[in-house]
Image (tube, rainbow, N blue to C red; front, side, top):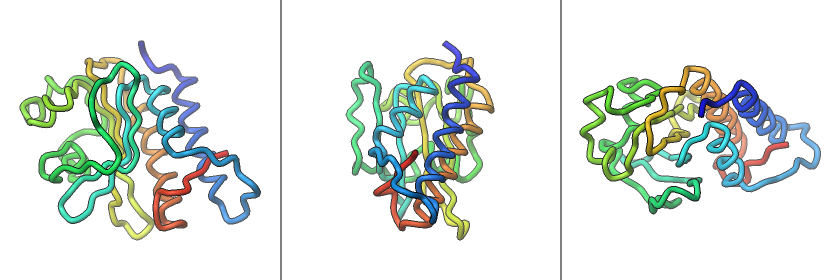
Length: 181
């Protein structure tokens, strides 16, 4: 099922809500846990897993994870992998497009151990770039099935989420306390 324009619009609206809730002049924002926020992003994009990662000291660490009820993967916040073995590094380095409707179409990633271990079949990612230009990490989604319906609009929506998360981290110093209205 293809994400509708309404779903993509919802994601952009959520990104704007994060920015509004963390603005200097925000008044009593409706604070919701970042895991709920990420679940709504995952559901709007119709993906199985969504996560926010932090890249530090040669590792990719899951900061927040949302998994659909149909996914049996044991991915948890706090788990980390060597950065060299991740799609996150490839996206940050510009060696992997932000939208991958079917990993089998890209032989360089289809054979990666993490592709099999996480059963990644389709993928969306956006770097979280701080005001300083430093890369904090990524916000990513993947599905266990091919998603030929994924488009650049989906990646653009995820980039808006990444930008909102970056603005929050720039202001607060961490992802903790992320709120949206």
